[in-house]
Length: 297
Image 1 (tube, rainbow, N blue to C red):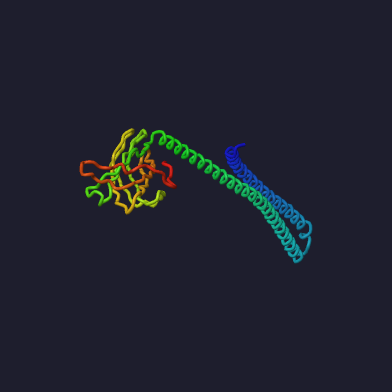
Image 2 (cartoon, helix red, strand yellow):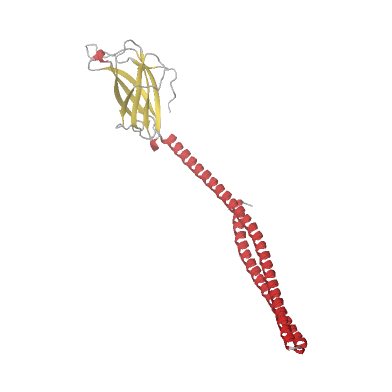
């Protein structure tokens, strides 16, 4: 039997038990009052019988005596009648007291049993409520997991996917004295826009990836539509020696505000300069392998 059905039947049983208990107590009280009235009637009957006996005794015995003896005989008969009546009514009180003591004792025992059952029912109800809460929490957790799985599936199927398709170096206005301008071409391979683009990077001497990146360029105003490419630039300082390595990642937001990262590692072989004839050697940047470079998300 399911616990919820058992709990409902237990509550119904307790209600019926309460009604039956009330009826039983009413019957017991009525029976106790009836027994008490019977004791009183028996005492009254015995008192009347003894009174009739006393009068008969007085009529047969006391009236034939002298005046002094007659008075003494009447007083003695009257005292005996009153003593008998007191004994009868004392006996009624004792029997009534014993009866109600018995009734109250039985009621107390019955009440204890009913209280124990009530405590057990409260415990069972508490356990049932706790189990219902556990079931509700499991259902809520499952619904949340299902919603998360559905969201994740939607994100994976509709998200933006950014990658760097080209990186080049261009001279700064001060040429080699001030480092280089790094131009990157970012393509969105996904199905929805990418927004809040940020480029985290650092320039180091060895091709080892680290999350301790010192620079960030924020392009929050740029939205990259699906299957479109944008160009953006940032400046790097001139290094004491080359090659150096530009490592970092693109961070961007897509559908359902999901964030992703695209990691990169490029080798810079020198600083681009103008040749005086309108030309620039800007092919000084090439993608390379970095130790510990994470996979793009």
